[in-house]
Amino acid sequence: MSYVNQVIQPGEKLRHIASIHWIVYLPGLALAVAALVTFGYSEYAVSGKLFLKVAAALLGLGAVYLLGREWFTWWTTEIAVTDHRIIFKTGLVRRRTNEMNMEKVESVQVDQSVLGRILNYGDVVIIGTGEGQEQLRAIASPINLRNHITGIS
Image (cartoon, rainbow, N blue to C red; front, side, top):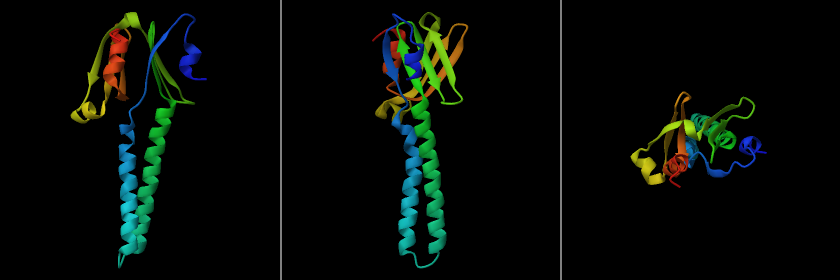
């Protein structure tokens, strides 16, 4: 059972569920492509085949690490907006949660780069009165999330 389903109160309505954008996999994918290119080049190289194969294996291990880490972060992160609060949870064994009442939300900032505008991802900063702020990085559809928090949608 998800964390959001565990903490939602009777009568509380779920308005929106957000997630991390797929762009976070890009460094791992780039490393995987570099590993494949290095391995392919090692097959045609005249000298240094062993070095190139070891380099390809190390690049491949790095790619698996980066992709696995980002997948685990995506899998263990929950972001939800209800009619009463914003719920953010990350982690599996070592869990970090933050729940902010809608009445305490002072402002919501969305930061998108040019690539973020094109691919529809960005960082969302939720600033609360007396509760500090929560920064959510690489969120898919950040404007949609902001609209649900501010009550536009």
